Amino acid sequence: MLPQQEALNILVEFLHVHGYRKVKGVPLDTIRKLASIVLEQNVCVYDKKIYKQVLGGAMGSSFTLTLANIFMWKWQKELVRRQDMT
Image 1: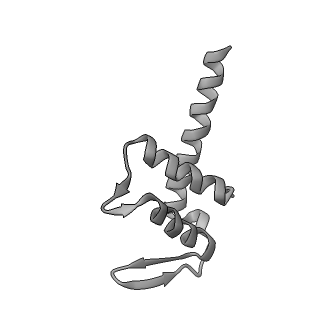
Image 2: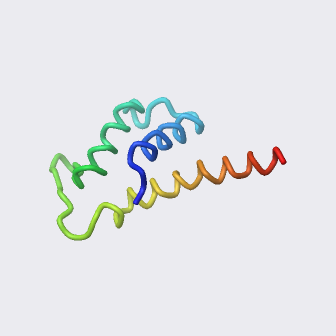
């Protein structure tokens, strides 16, 4: 399980590092809030309808798998930085 707040912080950092201030007109703080809802409530909106995941958990969704990859990006970047210092 990902630490939620840290993962959300890293998501925003990842987008910022890659030059995003908005994604398709949506500001990063709004993306963070929406991502938090997905993680905490297991819900999302698609085509103006609200969907709640009732089977399995959030960790199996494509969103959380992508979030886990971004989380690993941060730690790999930090590991390389530390290795370069020694």
